[in-house]
Image (cartoon, rainbow, N blue to C red):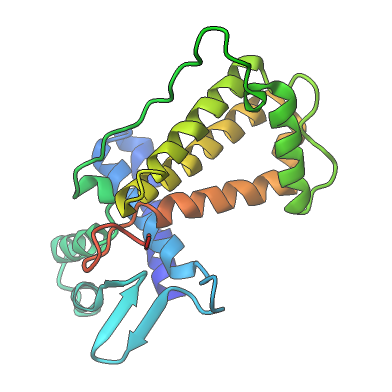
Length: 242
């Protein structure tokens, strides 16, 4: 709870500062790191009901396999002993830097662009409005909303075709059968879902009110964070692939 509270306070601080200073790139990086810390500190393991935080007094504190014991101690000392704003700021930055996006510290792998359909090839059902309307309504139903909020006119042909291409490209990355490819693919999937929900919400009010859409957004947010957070011991992030 303490780590999540620190992360939330940093997000609130950055949001407040941005109102007066504008959207500086440093604010975006700082906020993203804090958001990743929050997700890692509150995410539940699929195998266990505990969070991704493990603590051994006076020895280690790991969040999502990242050992932050030294950095957190430095922040606590700077704060508790009132060492001044500069010391607190530097130690806070050092702590949050542990949760930088993996893309900031490792080279990107080559993006795989989806291949255009061959002339005369049979059209792909996955690029149709009907397919995505049904797929999303079924997803929302599984997430607790059986009202079928994605109605006629919510999804355009352009959006349906784009989603088919984006998902195919993400799976092509995963099919490279490397940990980096798997990580990049999952990050792309989550980003594509968030963008699609934003577009749908702007056109269809039922989406904004849908509990299923809110749960899907929350899950995509967490997947994006977990697939992009680096680990000191495992630069591939919180993604293990065999």
